[in-house]
Image 1 (cartoon, rainbow, N blue to C red):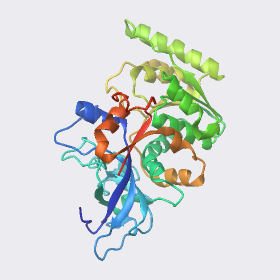
Image 2: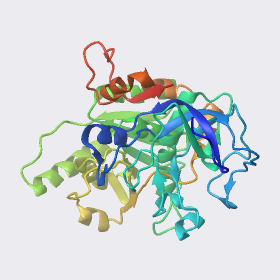
Image 3: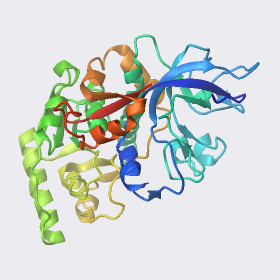
Image 4: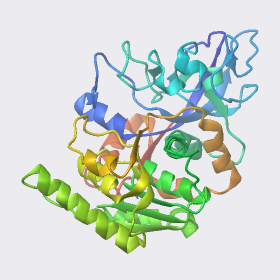
Length: 379
């Protein structure tokens, strides 16, 4: 059992959600440009219970006097927590200005971005910095705690979508949004947009089953509609590809009742055709927010963005978003969301089965006939 150092606590992991990056590492040994150089424990969407404190320590949500995020003011044995596994240097310009997710020295559990790699949470017990353990209210379950991490991605993307541009920001209330990709992050983004006051939300995907789940999120309380995108073969030329994307964007906007385009487009797949679609589906002066990690090199209609002042905004994980994500689950506004998204639950000893389920490559009798949206590994 790992013993906590003065700034750490020991945590018994109770739930870890599998992410697309986990699948990439597991199946291919890499996630985009991040390539494994040594064995790595996966998992980073985690919640657990504090099981030990360091001797004679006072844990106050700070490290070396520098607050990293608004964590709980104190922790004790038995506290239930959501783990934020990105650990920054805490002293560089980006850290001290609140953008610690971009810290060049940041290590992230289950990621090969840095070496030596930092292990993830698919373990029974770990030690973790106390100020990166966010206390969960009693009415927030461990599964909801595991979904805090992907919800933090969504909230960071929404925050980023309100910044920049020619004016003083872009308000959410009364605006329109298109979410491309009905995976867990896409659905959480759509739900968060709804409770933030966005009045017209469309979530689009090529999978009808995922769209059916999205439509029923929160027992249908969210004001979102779904759009089934066609499955198309790759076009013979870049010109034809972009022409098809422009035509499809027009159809999506027309059906949604926003013929001039959406105020915001959240691209949650990383697939080049969806990024192209997102540019064309954005209104003049709108914003395309790149949430999904996909091909590092893509062919994009930059002229269609530049000439209409469509801002293309990058998103990398999150910063200072865990408290807001936990508050959403505690408020009841996200009741039923975890139950809809968590389609499979697997014990840690059956971890390999969990990865087969998450990749929709389960053997006969394992998948129970359900499409996997979020697989949670329990221990």
